[in-house]
Length: 239
Image 1: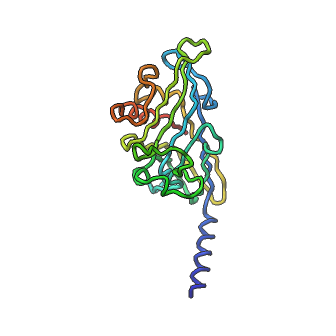
Image 2 (image 1 turned 90 degrees about the vertical axis):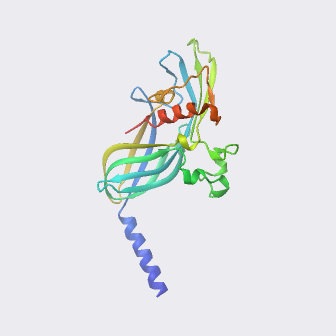
Image 3 (image 1 turned 180 degrees about the horizontal axis):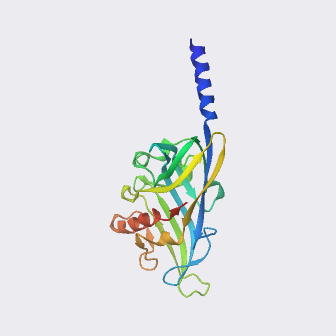
């Protein structure tokens, strides 16, 4: 009987695999609608030259919504680092079906954020200690990490640096990108999620004050900086 159950389980798994499609999500920085490297120099609204040196963030519960309004999760957690090609692409399988949108949270979902790197011993897990993203002093993970430099005089000499790292539960944001997809079994699909990097610093949530308030690393008194960054990040994605 046990052997029959095992054979049935294997057969079911193989049948399920046959009905799966492969989806590669590629995260591509943009400026003014053009694809760029994330470290590409750009000019902000105050005519300052900006260079981003770190753009790293967590995405949680990455899911597709099918045309029956059912959520199909493809990744529970992912760490995207635009500086590294290997961590700016996510590959996953998904049941063949028609889908109408992609949903994800920017940050670490509260159930995982309550845990520590010691709970994630799998090598290269996004929340493993090797990622160096855990805020031990605050007992939580950093959600979004943005570092860079600015040049006020546009004389090719940088005048200062900025560093904004969010992480509190209030910084978690949910995003939905609406687009129709039809995934067929055994097919592989390349999808690109564009990131408007200029809007990270100046966006719908407001403008980060790079000169007078150039840093945020978990100080509760400056939580408004984290909220501004989080609101901006929630609006930089497009398909």
